[in-house]
Amino acid sequence: MARRGGSIKKFSRVQVLFHWLYSGSWIILALTGIAFLWRGDPTEPAAGLGPLLQGSVGQTLRLVHRVAAIGLMTSPLVWLLGDPKSVWPDLKELFSFGKNDLKYMLIAPLYYTTGRGQLPPQGKFNGGHKVNFYVVFTTYFTFIGSGLVMWFGRGAVSDQAFHTAQLIHSLSFWLGSGLFLLHLYLTAIHPFTRRSLSAMVDGWMELQYARLDHSEWVEREVRSGTAQIRDAERPAAAR
Ligand code: HEM
Image (cartoon, rainbow, N blue to C red; front, side, top):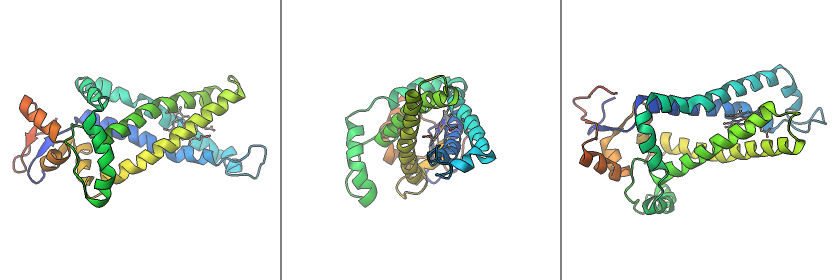
């Protein structure tokens, strides 16, 4: 995919694959899990979606939810085993939240709604990407922990532990869903940022956009000689 003014390699094919495996499983889990939030009072047969969920529709939703859960739980292995060299540098950058990231988070709401203000220079991931990552990282574990209790713990754990697991699972759902919708809007719809989506399609980002939103990273890559840049006329083979 050649772009105006050239492009810079941001993610490997393995990272792109991991992103879509994770988000694909996540979307299936959200769509199948949401029905159980309205299952109603189990002691009242006509309440909520309860009656529907007791039949074959419920069985199918439960099965698809469990299969997608296995996909979500194992998806990080794709990144860890497929492109291990990129794991540590990217995690190190994601987990370092500096002054510029904080400034970015404070200015971004005004900037993205009115176009006013100036965002500080950002690395490979901006402050918003980092906060999104912290929620994804935390809810990865809260979903798995609480989901496995609901999956295998019925009858084996106390009612209170079971209900706590349900509560943690649904809180993770609401928190994750809010962030997911914002992430979707910014990467696919918002006119300032939607050009970033190409990096998660073939790994390459418009150089002009990267210089705007990730100037620190571009400068660092160019200085160290590790930048993979191709111009629009002569596209290089992607890794
Ligand atoms: C990855 C590990 C996960 C496992 C092992 C898991 C497992 C489960 C299980 C066993 C249930 C109970 C369904 C039933 O009543 O039979 C459940 C409910 C649910 N799941 Fe998941 N799930 C996981 C991830 C997710 C994710 C990523 C989402 C949303 C994005 C999600 C959303 C929900 C919702 C909304 C419910 C209903 C919660 C409630 O009853 O209060 N799950 N899950």
